[in-house]
Amino acid sequence: MKKVFIDGPISPEFISESIRKHQTKTDIGAHNIFLGQVRADVVNNKTVAAIDFTCYEAMANEILTDIREKAFKTFNLTCMHIYHSLGTVKAGEICFFVFVSAKHSSEVYEATQYLVDIVKKKVPLFGKEIFEDETHQWKTNK
Amino acid sequence: MKKVFIDGPISPEFISESIRKHQTKTDIGAHNIFLGQVRADVVNNKTVAAIDFTCYEAMANEILTDIREKAFKTFNLTCMHIYHSLGTVKAGEICFFVFVSAKHSSEVYEATQYLVDIVKKKVPLFGKEIFEDETHQWKTNK
Amino acid sequence: MAVIKYFGAVAEITQCTEEHIEVKNETLSDILEHLFKKYELQQLPIHIALNANLVSIEAETAVANTDEIALLPPFAGG
Amino acid sequence: MAVIKYFGAVAEITQCTEEHIEVKNETLSDILEHLFKKYELQQLPIHIALNANLVSIEAETAVANTDEIALLPPFAGG
Image 1 (tube, rainbow over the protein chains, first blue to last red):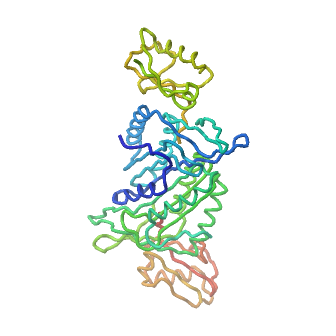
Image 2: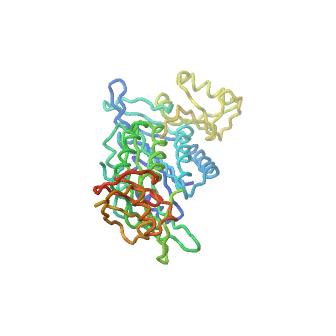
Image 3: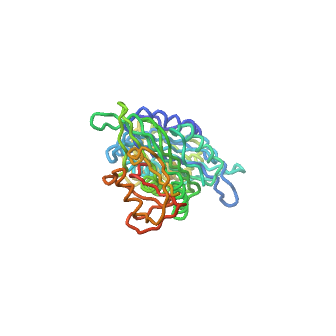
């Protein structure tokens, strides 16, 4: 099982380091990266300052293993990485990083979208949206 | 006209710096990044070591301005950046970087694919694939 | 003892993330009915996982003292 | 003088990236026919740009001494 969960925000340096590691794989011609960034949404005049993520890790790891297997079977990929934050991620910071690589550009787009959508839908992650006044509400994926 | 052309490879640090600059834009919820990486393709037993890119810049800049305008009209984007290398980019290095940002994830995928495809098709860039034995062939987009 | 795990909005209401209960002959439905009443969870949209797999709440599933039951509010990853 | 620009595989054959020609009454087709013959470019798939805009090779377009004509081999960006 590959490491998916990261404490706190996913830094731009972590992303560039992930990209750099793929530069030795010279059969790759195309990378597609999705990044989820915490929005400072305004709800009833209150602004989201951060999201605090928690996870049912035992279940999440099983589901993520299935997701990886299915994606490698469905798409013609060279590499696939999924990272998600746990704990507090402030507005403007990155909480979700999907990284897909293939020989040709045509292979990557659908895989990225599939992974983003299925992680949102199937992985037991919970998000407490903390407003600037320290009240909160629970995030729900539509 | 925004700067598109970069001398030599696009470094992972350039990419992370671009990501970092978007962290102050807290209305963004989703980024999608496409990276084109030079493949060490084998043609008649010879391996591609690098691509040397040249460009008809006057024409490229006009076309890129049209592409940007059309993309902002067609897709609901917050930001859009296109970068392409000129000069020598070795196998494993990145020569093409498309970066699209929007409020919601559903907005970004189609825009990225549109931009990648139209840049490949319409921008007058030329690529000399240099083999390890210093012979070469001219790259052609299908 | 069976382990009951609470997450997110559910854990906020139960005010704990985990508790242990002694199971005799209760089915999954019996246990859940008891917990939903105890914590007044009826209004929440909750999914149930038994040993890390989603299950139907209606199922007359037997529960062993080695089992882990999780009460999961709507997912919010990404 | 009109400027003729050569790129990529075309520039490799012409062995220069730019040349200047004095235009009198020649159309774009006349000039291109001359250049294609001079450099034996007939076999190459070439697009033509007049002042940075793609044009049809067949067009009986007039050319001024301020114009820029570019001979473009297949595009290869990305």
